[in-house]
Image 1 (cartoon, rainbow, N blue to C red):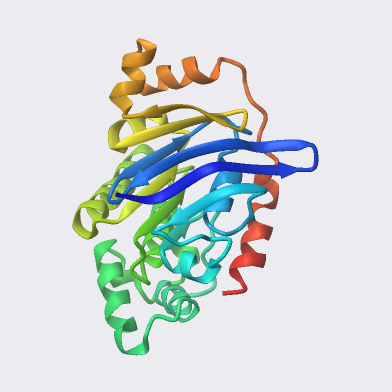
Image 2: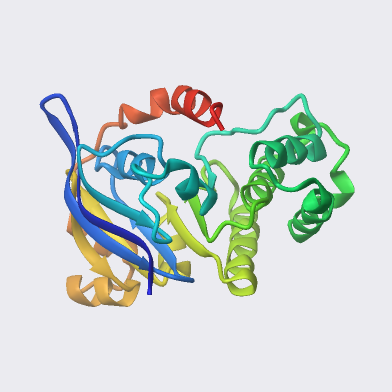
Length: 264
């Protein structure tokens, strides 16, 4: 049964079609990788999935809820870890968690227990009273993952969760994500430019380019179809060898997050 359904999704900005009629679904409990070069339309798609942008046309269902018609219910179904840092460095780890719990209206009688449970899960409970500005990049990512799970979401969106982390920390973060998927049966939808992460962790992969999905399947399927030993080689064969420019979405990402998430 699909927990994410996308049907003929389109997003236009004036004369520019950023997302051009894409369709895909994600099964409940999957780890699903959404890959593409810069400017492919990934970020625009994720913004539509997470209620930050309204589609021009097409339909989205998150756990049966339409984000356009029922934004609040759709938001309760997912947690998100943004690509850009979104913690308050001047607060402690515990204060960041408590603030987010209030925004998500986690009941007071279970809030403390849930926060402790998640912070222990990511091995940060002993650092709960430390200011976040003293944390390493990996510790901040772990705290953001814990924060995104406070309201028991069924889907966790991860937008390039390991960007800028060293290989050891990247592996550590992924061990938490995989354990989380196994233990809580949470569906994980992630983007990454580290294609080996998708090769190693994803149940299925969708590859997007020039606003369209150009391939879908398991990592093994895509490697077999392109005659590649590595998913990274398959990805390049599917999307070409040209160097892409950075997407314009990145410059406005934090402004969008602050504006939209601030309304919760």
